[in-house]
Image 1 (cartoon, rainbow, N blue to C red):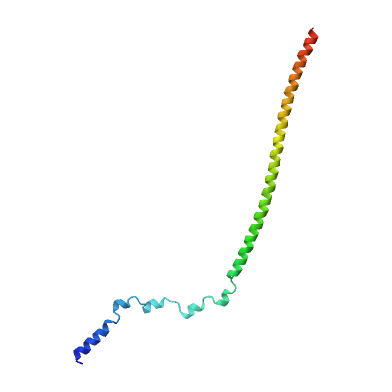
Image 2 (image 1 turned 180 degrees about the horizontal axis):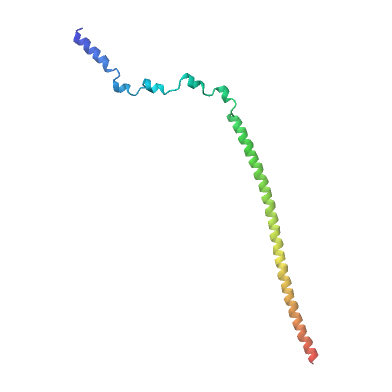
Length: 129
């Protein structure tokens, strides 16, 4: 193989090498300085540290307790509302009855006045005759 052929082969192999543009996307030493070190990572919470926090099961349980209390409160309020509605209906019936009684009393008083007027007319006729 001649020197020219060897150079051609080397050049062919070099075509697959990375160029400066290809390497620009990789992190530099300066970029790596901003990353956390082992000492930085030691300050993070460990699994043992996280054991004190609530688990999903704990949160589910607490959520269920809150929902049960809300249901219980809703049932109590619904019973009170039903009771208040019944009292209100009874009060409306009472007011209606009182209104009718007042109307009846008013009608009876008008009739009584009418009867008294008629009686007075009759008495005048009897006295005048």
